[in-house]
Length: 636
Image (cartoon, rainbow, N blue to C red):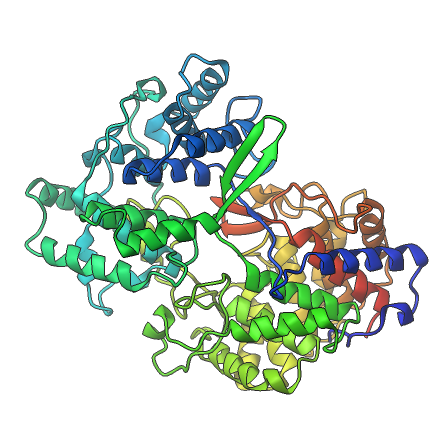
């Protein structure tokens, strides 16, 4: 089981350098806490956020020269030597990202014959041109008359009218996908266009448009291809008899889901598409819904002075609840207790963030009472299991006591109510597993369903142990699910972090906490996998290409967060005093900066496996802090 917090200076077996590193990390972590009690690190993604921000503003008619100049400066700064843009630090060229960046720079006034634009053009053409870009990129092109709407897969708005029992109704999509697909279907049905006064003919390779690779050779792919052609025929006749009703319902659906801060789901994709869809439906930018959306967008916009001038970039989402829970766990691991002022203010803030209203999750679980936490400041419709489990773990770790008792009970009950039928837990929904959604021709980007995952299930099991429910039948069912998910090589897949190092770093502590012996084959296989994949420098790393190429599993440049995940697993497995763990701790000590944190340009967070990744700027600090503290404390 996870060790009880101990005071730092009393930790046995701690050499002075390691103890000093932990002191520095704790001091730095304390210094990042806001006056309101929370922690929030930047969530760094890729330049599609910034390109789409400018395009959205152009569509709404609110783009300014200053915004354009600052965003363009940022986009240019992220271009690589080969002319492309990537989806993560050190990743391969990404065609659609490069197309969107190029379009944004053309919008900013960069002529195509400039050297950096010519290099980008060569990269796009080498990747197959506009025709090979993803459907979502070509939707952006269609919004500005740069691609023919009829050459895109159909996204009928009528699907919003489908009852819950009909396959491919909106609730068959994951929460992030349904919030995006509904406004996109409005745009695809209305087919608006804004004239940019430019063309992108220089990016056309002249080949056929990209189509989603078939999921299998079954008749489903043929059937959906036929359906797409039929829907296009209906579009030529101005849609179905239910088009007007569907548009009204879609507008109502979108407006109902706007959050208190003006966002949709607290994430970029549904936010930008919802604003544009409502505008296309006739709402002006000073409409209260659009005005609130644009005001809230400013909080997701970061500005920074650089030697080349000010830059402006956009966060895809924000993670104050998640970051605060992880920070509390790290402080608790470091021996900081409930009477500490930093802990008290963080606990108070987290308790105030508890969600007591129903959201989309209740469609599948109507009898489950609300309770839990979301990822963002304002995302009350979409609490998630992972955040809730981590918050409850944090409250237990720091001994929050009686004031947190009722919230812990409600959160635990909500998490148990969100268990999927197979025993695992997903992030936002229960039993959201209809893979037929992937066969839709327009679904060529990102995860569109929310099945159970090993990392979320592991966090839930750890939480259930912390509240005394290890023996509960639902916890035991979850344990069986997690055991069955171990890969043949001994690792676990990481849905929300990169990748098998993350999944294994979550699974092993959960299994041991649930009472699985450290000598059990399932634990020893995991330890062997971690030891086998340790880098020569003593750290661990895993490149994000492991999501699409098995050869990258457990391989990559050492990072602080991934090294910490491996150490957390080794510690739980009773291997904290072994050679691999000692070398891992040594790597963390040797690479720590004088300010107490670590450099980590690599992206180790996952949005959509294979498509969208995140550099959580706090991961490089909170996880190493926990790992150092636990390893210093020795085996429980």
